Length: 350
Image (cartoon, rainbow, N blue to C red):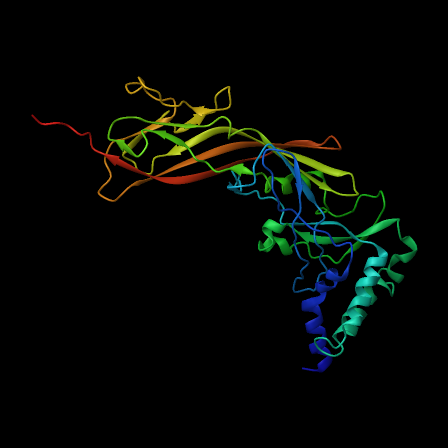
């Protein structure tokens, strides 16, 4: 293999490092809430596919309202054929920034292998300077548009679909919609926000606590103060693009962890009450009543054994945007599993 071929192979596999030298490369979501509106940012580095695609860090920022970002999980869409986008294209580089990236490559020549910087620079110049298809980095259009680049959803960067945005940065005039189906849009932002919804852990309350008893109902409920409507707004600064995705709890599904059990209601689906709570707290005097949400175990667990009771909350999801668009997204679910020990009814022999 010739030295030039080696240089080109190395260049193709590391091409996207150039974005790190671009001053305007921004950051992506990660953050905190706490029941108040709060913006947050983290980082998501540029990367490259086998084709040497120049990618950028997403500039999308998010704001959460009504949720806490501690002890939270990611929603699982009820539609198994749908997932939030793994990648998209967004405005990333000005003409001067593309030129800066090329110059940055040439300046590191010899840092890894002698000649790599020039090879990468030549490859980039062929596209952005020499008219294939852009000439002189579009410097004569500075301020009249941007080069749009592929970005990865930070939460799905390891998803194979994250490499499906495999186009090199392309020019879009200011005010013109990009002719690219995967270009960022209010709906893309809404679907991105889906992954950022800070749903709380499903920590159900049970009575009796400790051990359940065979054939006696165990009451189950959720605190109305914890399970309430929440939303995330995703915005792309400088574009006017913004979308708000809202999640509202609608039901709790109980799986006892054994076939030797009965759920209340029989479907195991406990609907949300008008006040936002689910189920009903146990109180003295209700021992002989049937709980609106609960379970009765028909067989005890063995010594040092337990049943894995799962509790899953279903959230209804919809979105709105600054341009008047909006609609529904697939319901999301999030649940936890806890061990339940069941004992036999104790009797006294005289």
